[in-house]
Image (cartoon, rainbow, N blue to C red; front, side, top):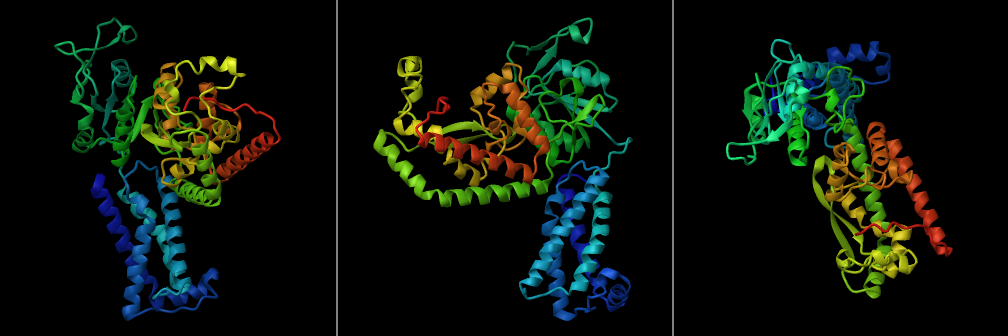
Length: 494
């Protein structure tokens, strides 16, 4: 079976060779003449063959465009045949549009329309067959699985209930199972000979080999030709959890979790087996491309149009109170990472050090005295969020997605029993389905339901509708403030 970089090289080389060969064939008069006479869609196209340097230039350009168009498909993934075929065909059509655009803009070479049509039509059949032929097969005679996690009870449960040929397990800590009459009576402890937890060790599970720590995951996947990894985390560290997912995804390894322990991950909703598939990438890659293009266009246009407003706000903040114009804070990003989110400063400097300020709100008409005069206006009109357009432009955030939380709040919510890390599977956003339904982090379970629903239903149309609704809500709040009313403003600590 072909995996890792070998898969990428074989896939790219095959696409290049196939594209060149197909172009050479469809360029022949013996192919073009019958095709333009017998195929109704080509009746109006004139057969024309290229030769000499024009043919070589056309071939080089076509290979470059098709290889670039299919680049995402060179990453080994556990595709189903129908999904792989459909995805490859979409990328071929995208490459065809690119070739047509080059001809339209009078590039040095212009591929004849009949040749271009026959090339794309043929590649729509041949390239999916090529990718299906080299895909990572899951034959029952060669399929092997390992378990990765920190929960001995889950490891034992997966080992008992799964029909997969499990060759062993990896664990981030040296955990051991206490003796009990049944798996449900066994408890998890962390122990070593000297009583101290050791990173990159492994649990001791009966009748199952310990393969090592998480740092050895990649080499074990390759050396043992592993096709499936079963997750068995109880208190998943973000780096361990998503590092495991990323490694598996890179090597085209399927990821599964026991149905009874699937609350913390996104799973395929149609799964009915004991082990269910983890939906590492819930969206089609083209959805990501459209979403990113929308993010860049929205953020770039917003920063350009609002540049006079940004200047006015910066001046007002400096005149109102001493301190910096922007406030930065670490927030959780996609796949459990962190990034710095920026807002216009709406509080006095070192506001969080003012321990008695929050208590004195009742003596100030319910207004947090740490919030400046300009800050109250910015919060009520949501204008303090404008700097986050830069975070969107550089790719830390998206326009639409789950709102990023502080890492400490993330951990507290997770410890309260809410399966919060489902939100980590996608990039955080400026607004989202929860925000337009006025659900905040004070209702984490309800907010999570909206966030997961967005992850499941995301589309370009959905993003546009959410952004339109959010802009309307901001306009209403801004108008209300200008009219002298005082809508509730978020007084969350910066």
